[in-house]
Amino acid sequence: MAILEIKKNKEPVLKKRARKVRKVDKEIRQLIVDMVQTMAKGQGIGLAAPQVGVLRRVIVIQGDFKGQRILGLINPKITKMSKEKEKGTEGCLSFPGVFLEIKRAKEIKVKGLDINGKKVNLKAKGLLARVLQHEIDHLNGILFFNRLGIIDKIKLKLWH
Image (tube, rainbow, N blue to C red):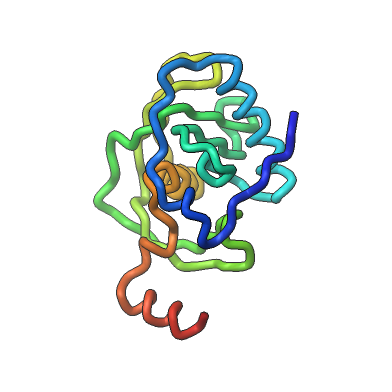
């Protein structure tokens, strides 16, 4: 187990699209274990591989998933999003101390693979839906402030 360095702010890796995982092997499983440790140390509830400098489609999320405390997802893909949206406060381990009101789909469906390479289908709402959308955005090189409306983006630029 290792604590990985969380990439911050303007690091180019945060804006790049992660590559699909072709095979769930020992290396990917170790990455998930290391990401869980890193997320816990950073007191986060979600972490995507690009945030630790690895351009692979892997995320980890803390929560309650059918008796599991941690969800590791490989190649996660949102398959359905509710038309209904809601605003909520989000932070990000790559942007310490920054909290923004972001509008996201209220409910989503996600498919992917678990740490053993088995197919997973999830229905999520509330905080879990928000965290999944945030972390999957990271895999696509999208940062949470990219989801701000134009007025909020102007306010953020004036504030910083």
